Image (tube, rainbow, N blue to C red; front, side, top):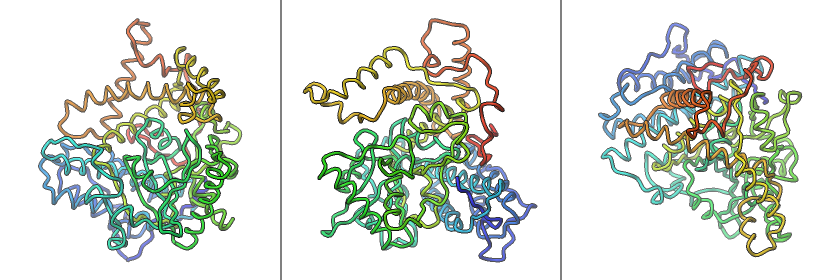
Length: 521
């Protein structure tokens, strides 16, 4: 990944001296502490930074606080709607302030990379914290929310947040402009896997490029695993009812429009003239546009305008411990090229300073489920990297996947035509197996978290969920070792027969990023 992070990462725009080694964030004991910590962080973002190393160390402390935040720490149940609104708004503004400083990041050193990783971690933890408060705001009386009643990029504060700069310009998806980029999060375990697949965790799994035609109609250009690349009316995207959606706008809206028009016309030509969609790119090779994955649609659009426009500025890197998983997905990575290999992960767009946040929307009825899936996939990848776990599909799944792969070649037969919409010809049976067994393992782990959540009146924190998952893994491993006949999920997600040599099989993560803060890498 091309990480370039400056020694003045969150450079002073004023002469305040809040970011000094003498001051560190305290733990959260009540709502007043949280208000103070958010306010202090905001001040520090616009203050002096003595080095990238100190940036990383200081932001890591804030990350620990926000990620470990529990309802009891701040008396969450007693917060008023006005207090919740203030906290959500302050957190959102703090994230925008952090993003506004990213154009200063140009230090290629190890400390510089760690600093950027810490920025990404703090942004992620703040968003989770906002989730908790939005849930409480919307369900304060204990009422259940109907996910179908919420329309993407419509509604009010606090689940629909708009950057102050665009307060009078953006009210809903009707105000999207040609060239806008939509970052979203699907509802499946595969979406959570895409969000967590890189060295630095993200909360998003999909990118769409907006295009407005000469008639003023809005469309999206996007790539889907099942059907490849398509152009669709904006309504099609809105009706997908994703859990999260963020709208980004490129600094030069004219160039952005040309980029979206170019890729729209390319995909439209293949879809409607050649009657053969551009295939989904499972290799995630953004430098080869013969096939396109979702983020690559945006990259290819800007490249069409100028080869000098390389978006996003910071790209996703992978860890060696994930190589077997990545290879099954179709990504051509190994121990030899892992240091050079990078890709455009959907969440990378959030940390490109050439794109501004216009608005952020959440489905209040889905964000808890999305957060739980994030915790599960974080742990699954951690167990892969640290303990050598691997997916082992049962025979029935392997047989079904092989049959489906073969049958996909005969979709001209009436009773097999439905397969065409479920997976493409360039998806292997191994890939299909992986997605199926990922769902099986994920559902089993989510059942355990849901059981614990029922016993808690407030949303579980990420740290609480991590602990629950680790405990369950240990329990299941003990059952597995005793060879009990009782069914367990470990048979589908197994530990290695031999102890993993971490120094031999897993490189140290360059970002020194914490997937969970109490388990340092």
